[in-house]
Amino acid sequence: MMLRRALHAQRLPLLFHNRPRVKPCELWASPFEALFSTHVVGDKPILVRDFIHSALYDPKHGYFSQRSKSVGVLQGAIKFNQLEGRKAYMKYLEKIYKESDVSWFTPVEIFKPWYAHGIAEAIMRTANLSVPLRIYEIGGGSGTCAKGIMDYIMLNAPPRVYNNMTYISVEVSPSLAEIQRETVGEVRSHLSKFRVECRDATDQSGWGDVEHQPCWVIMLEVLDNLPHDLIYSENQVSPWMEVWVEKQQDRETPSELYKPLQDSLIKRCLEIIDLDKKHDSQSSAILKAKGVWSKIFPKPRRCWLPTGCLKLLEVLHGVLPKMSLIASDFSYLPDVKILGERAPLVSTKKDGSSSDYNSYLDARGDADIFFPTEFWLLERIDHYCSGWLQIQKDKSSKEGKKRRAITLDTSSFMEEFGLPSKTRTKDGYNPLLDDFKNTKFYLSVPTHNTQ
Image (cartoon, rainbow, N blue to C red; front, side, top):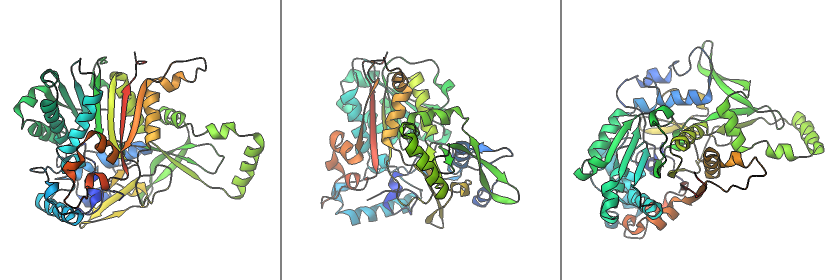
């Protein structure tokens, strides 16, 4: 089954909804005001990534800032082995959604503690335990992942590993930061090893000095809500142009504006994707034929670029050059209406039912905007930010990769590192393995080539 997260609470896609990264309920704008707000785009044109960031995270008008009771916390673990099968599981989900009155539960919450235990086991097998274990989590939600990992290490690692470990949550939302402290503090011995830093992980100044010791970075359902840029080409052979968003006179919906490529972050992202490599390697005859064909049958091109991911990984590699990384997210989104490669779903909920917009420009604080992650591209960005891809431009360089990476389906990851028997129902149905077909885990560790 393909998961999507912006549906009614009793349907599976909600299981993989992202945790918000702004403080809810603080600076309210009513849904009506947000829907017709002109605050997302000011008087000057802005890049698409800035439009998306504002539509999602603006303190007054952003989607996440208007979501009260958005992150659910279960009182106890679900006893899957007492459920008959899928029907009973879905009925139980509907029940806990109604009782808690929240928008969604994250998978680490639904499958606690087993989801976090699988991540902890992956860390334990790979980490150099001769040095103090240091873990960063970006967007720690309710703290369930942090507590689950610390519980597992306390019970399964040598005492010195747990006693010397540090777990740091980097969280934008002050309210979620407080919830995390409460969750982790349920085990008193965890508190001396855990702290929350309320800041934006993409702001390099918040990280301080470069940390040269090995560490782990965890990002669960973070990549899908990172801002993206959009580029446009009139036809098959025209050069790419960057897309900006500007107000329209006497109209509520903004419009697109196309400019020659100038933005350095967009240019670096294009360099990594190498969109024009195939174009450059083609013969002049083929290019001429394509030029004629594009005039007769012009086909505009649109491509979404994960510039938010690139910015975050540039910062992380800069300040944590020996980090190991675990990220989990959507690899594919079904029923996307918006045009372009790597296009997002833009989904809103009204009166308990959800609907998708045909344009990202319609999202003005009332809709979630979430993107699929192309994991081959995530790996290329990872290598680029480590410095290895730039080195390869020097044909004489023999230096090996600085990262060793692997991408696994969620089911494969949990079968390898988790305890799948703990999330299996009586008839053999296992929602953790059976319902996450369009999600993957990405694991990346430094090699001996990292200085």
